[in-house]
Image 1 (tube, rainbow, N blue to C red):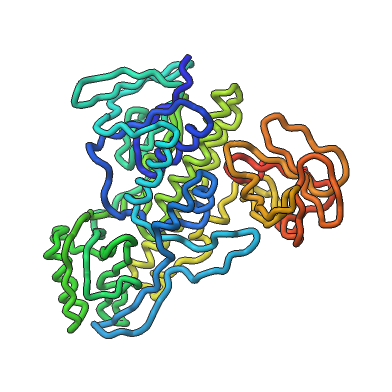
Image 2: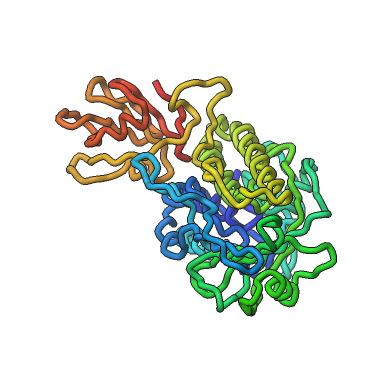
Length: 476
């Protein structure tokens, strides 16, 4: 039987999954029906939890070097400057949370970084390759791939549909896509130049203080002079540069703002949906194929990336003979997606209603609080919760972080204190966490400032196992 995983869709979700599988030595093939790579900004906000995923996958440095922090928005009512606003209030890094703030980078550039990382494992996206049919049995999946050169039949152990909201995989499986579409609301998103504006800021132009959501917003895109444009769109209007320019003339007063070089544009309607199931047999759904969100809150791309991060190690475990983790993918991620859809919809409602705080994002929007703990579980840090970071020192006295220990495809076991035998775990990296001034045998790190004991609410003898995706598997 083949142990190959076939991924349909080469957006951020499919690429993240492919990297995670490839670094585990799992043969993976990524196909996409598009003839060329996506070239717009779309999902430009990378949330803190996704930055932690990117740290583990080896792309964080490239992403941070290419992107920018959340921009300060300069607000104008009736063409008059009225002050500065922030979508996210900046937070200081802590020992437990090293990346507390979102980072901004156009989605096409994020995808290019992920493709480059995937290529380091010898895997390349196959463009112009559409998955057109599939069947499955107890041993694998048979997929039909159609290209300009003909039809190919492929056999894989598992298939993952990361092929977007119109997912062929989901439709072929007959999985209902539950939710609603509101055709009365249209939102325009696009990438455009506006050289008269300071590119170090975002800019929000509203009709007046009484009509704050009538107008448009511009968010700077790094690496050039373009902004991402966002605005409600009249029912009869077309997504053209002339329509954008008309908005500028209407809402910016005497600024003489001229838009040029519309490089990408789309019209979005509130299509808020959740797949009834995230899998069927040996076929799974991830990203927009499983859930589609309003752009409000910047949750969609990030949720898809974390679907993939949750799924990768579980597919690998199943291929190595342990199917139990794979059975947790749907209940864990569908619950999260439903909660995130609720948040995105609430923010959209605020936008439509013109609420004063419609542009603000709270702690829940950073996705650091996502947890898979059992209902009714109590305690500060329990199985299912995100594993915190902490600064420690290694056996040579060099400063490292717990995230450095976790980085890679393995699980990690931490035993707190210098007593007792290190627990055996053939499939995990095992470390003792000791206090300064104590000694230990075997592999250990020193919690020089007490941050690790504090973050894990640990006492001597506590044993914590961290899953490959950075959540607690158990604590004893």
